[in-house]
Length: 284
Image 1: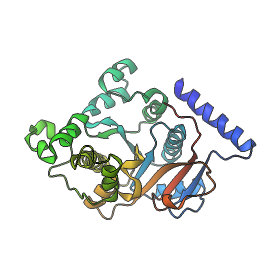
Image 2: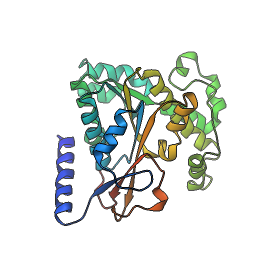
Image 3: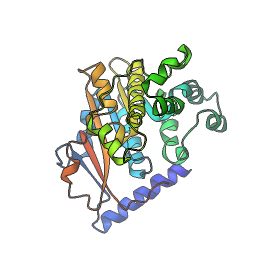
Image 4: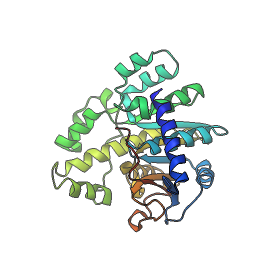
């Protein structure tokens, strides 16, 4: 019920905003030109992989994700992947989709995020109803913690059974990618050189999960934080490193005070950029 309330609240907010002449969101292409939702859908349908970058607490992010999944899956075979679940919970996810687990059992085993019921449950329920595979793509956090403390070298001591939950070693890594450099700057040096390496492990593992589970001729839609795919880096970089010919469409969300004036600094952040009013109420 919570997710339904969230969607209804958003739609009501949109109607009120437009009635007052104030747009809540606008969709742009990578060059900052306004585009229609249907044009984005047409490009998505031709892709191999779509990376939908969200703000985890932004309800319009989640509305867009649900809309894309609903519209694309109507006439296309799709698999979805979710950063919000870690690779070692896949059997739990499968059991829940097959209705072998109750919601309460799923919650106790899958380690869902606190905003799961309001922001992600609707994606799972839709996938269950329509027989859409859901892949838990993210690295278990304990392995990211190892990299944060010991660097990539700390992963070498893992048992064989543990290594199946992460991207194959050694992990390719380019410390000069702007996204990783910006992470160091934002943290003011706290965490040292291992901080972006832990981020890279997540990116590499999510990319690996996509590649392992993508079916030939079918679309793979991945939902992740925008910082994991913004500027055609992160997951995108790892996917392209493995297969340069892969047709990938990226979507990002940004917040601005005025959605009808595209800020230059947001150009080329993604193939499609959803600009949302910064005053939209957050889900947490």
